[in-house]
Amino acid sequence: MPGLLARVYVTPKRGILDPQGKTVEQSLHVLGFDEVSDVTVGKYIEMRLGGASREAADARVRQMCERLLANGVIEDYRVELVADRS
Amino acid sequence: MPGLLARVYVTPKRGILDPQGKTVEQSLHVLGFDEVSDVTVGKYIEMRLGGASREAADARVRQMCERLLANGVIEDYRVELVADRS
Image (cartoon, rainbow over all chains, first blue to last red; front, side, top):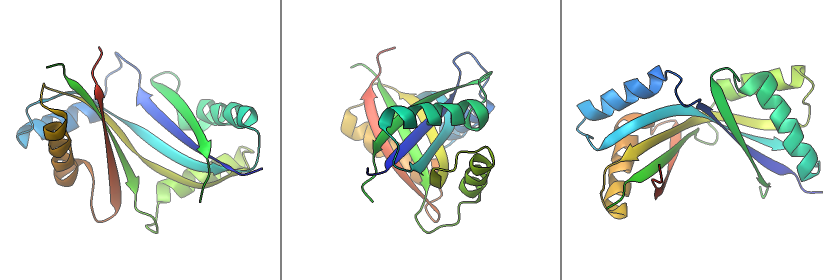
């Protein structure tokens, strides 16, 4: 079975203070990019997975998020699985 | 014209040392997720843009990446623009 590539997006929960996003937004304004608002900064994690089924891989990656990759108190996460072509 | 939502993915260039990715990979192995390899950790930035055309917005966001959001020496970036529905 070919491997899978997992893409994990970890973002600050809505309503949670995002100081990194605020800092980036202010810096963009200083640089003249005044059209920008509501900047949030999160993490984007890619990883290769061995040859498990898509369902099993999805459950495993969610476990990884709960246990290590995301802080459930302040962050949301989203998982995408794609066929690993490389 | 309705606004746009920009999604920016900043990732370590291939072949560049990614200590954060290595650390996450090792931690996942310690936790028993042995199927994981080639972990990379990057940034995921979302922002709202005022009502410019898609072409103009794309060019502006690329300028933001070059000037602030990504370090071109060690990082690649990818930009997606979607209609802002919120």
